[in-house]
Image (cartoon, rainbow, N blue to C red; front, side, top):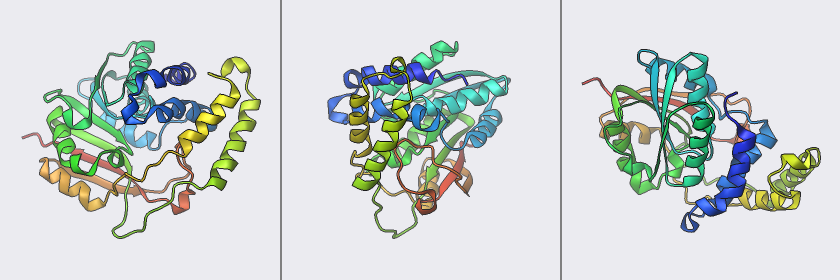
Length: 286
């Protein structure tokens, strides 16, 4: 595994309160995500590793791949691209886009640890520079983080950043029309998870922890109970609509059967969650 998650989780815990802008309200999110991914799941990659590896390989040219990472809670999405490239002996270059410096600096450090060029841009996705010539754009559960009024601008920015024949590759949960709002957590679920984390922390050496245990538990509870009511529903028809408006072609819209959840932010049993889709969208050659 190329991702130095122990060191990166320490960095995020130490620096999120400095690097995250107060008005974004993302400090607890970025502070806790990599640490909980490390402790709760053993650092497993986000869902869809085989899918992303297939697409990274398909989008490579002459043994090289330029991957644009479109948002990220930490280095997990970048790791999907990097691990795929390393396994298939591809030379990879990364362009990372996020409005917040905390995940961007983690991605920069991840690249430095592996001799990979990483160009970072602390901007919103609708402001991605044109003409980057990316072979592939990776997004993981990103669509619900984009304000509803910015979706078209983001899709057009993605299209402008791709080289002809390049692809947008996403793993995303999709809503069904008219479904009722879902409650992400309850106090009882948070307390149960809080107790489980407490037990795991007791098993770790003090030197392994980025902060005193009591502080970690407090920050974890703050992270889990963040409000996410602003997130827009994403429908299958939205994908087709925005892809067409950006002169892109949908190659795949495939629902998959989840076998486990790997999100540090999720509480809902997989059987009750919206279906996860593996999506491939291509920029035509001409």
